[in-house]
Length: 169
Image (cartoon, one colour):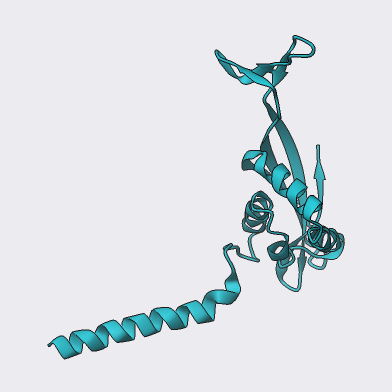
């Protein structure tokens, strides 16, 4: 009985270890190439974590080139620190829209819109309003958060949705 239990535990741990080896290529982010929203959601998480190397898997064309340039720039400590600081300003994000711009089977395009909430550096928060702060130099109220919308353009390339461009507004 104890011998059988030992073998079952050994088989379970072997299976778990084998699964980790097999699935280690998948990385930390789960996305589905057939779902544009899944791709953009993962891209947002990657941006929040300043994980540009993972973004190479879900970008293509010009956006992949920009991602590679950003990744190359992170070899400089100052640039890496600046990017980490900017990523730290991200409070949250929300996917707020998707539009299909496909006009034929060979040119499938989607736009996924993301609403970003970003922290604005400010001096002293006002106790009764967490969204505003007093600017000491001007004596005027200053917002502590900013909302930015980003449109991610995705194209289906080899049956996989990939981000090919983005535009913030």
